[in-house]
Image (cartoon, rainbow, N blue to C red; front, side):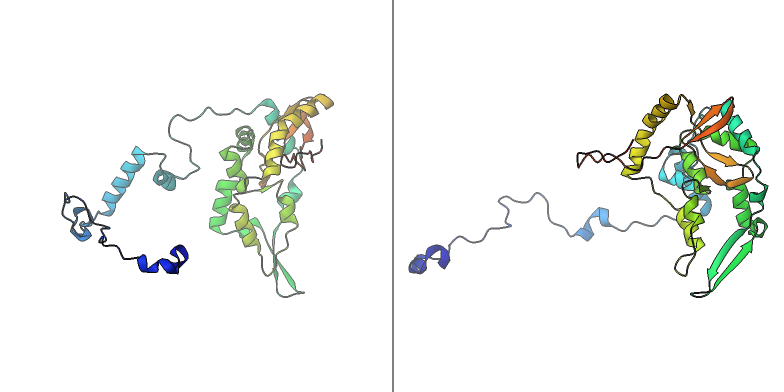
Length: 289
């Protein structure tokens, strides 16, 4: 008060005679106030109890009414095809059959006889290596391998056709359980240590949700232009193919950016790399052609 009025004026200031009226209504209330526990919507309701059969019937009714709901996807699997007429099947082309035939002509026996290896460090300078073959897998592991990894020749060529678009669900699902061309060097150079094991490495592979970054997006956006430029410069027709899996080595996978066929046989493998990309924020080109 002093800083606003000054000391000489204090004797002129008096308290107000108006009583505080905050919170007082100017009119009579329409309803009488009641405590919350007296209101009907907070009254405890009797809990309903259903048998297991009744719960299953209710669940099935909800799933049938909403086949794309979170409940339905949780029970039926999010990777399952949606209900309704199935999409038309993709028929393998002559070139896709030729590509698989070329793969089958290669000698794979030395690789099919390879053993799985596991290593465990017993100290700073001691390394013990364990070896086991596919027959040493547990029953559950063999079942998973047979169901999700192993493929026949017919399945391999069908996979080539169904994964031509390298962004569809099947393409992402199939590469989850295989060593891919983009990941093989990472696994080949991996050395288990006390603070990291193969189990952790495989778990990270199975749970990988990485969908790319700016450089990868730039590479995907530039790929059609790069392919067209290559075709014009080299006078070669590039054929887009999908998931390449050899039936004898189904745990390996490779998805080339394109294949050039000569006289009906695969002759050139095309890989497109975009090591750098355009930085619009800086306003200059850092990429290379």
